[in-house]
Image 1: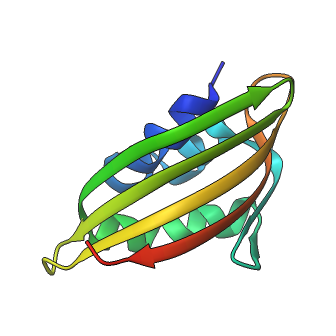
Image 2: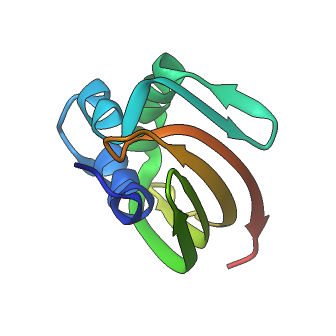
Length: 120
């Protein structure tokens, strides 16, 4: 059973650096009817899978700094910073404020998040 901490910290690494099929990784952490809303843009399962290609092509290093995480039954929230260094040696630092609904098996069913890029 996936857990929310792994969703926040392990999933990004698996998506960016694993040789495993993107659909397998997405399905391990999300329900098939996932709605992933970030900054007003909604991604469904297929759009999440499609996002993996560019991430794998561009990401060189990835660090997740988890500041806060709260769990309450099927609801979860987190505040964290993701730092990505690209293959072009550009560094992106993104603050994330994320709210999620979890399925009974622990996978994420819905996400609403707001991000903000900050200077590293």
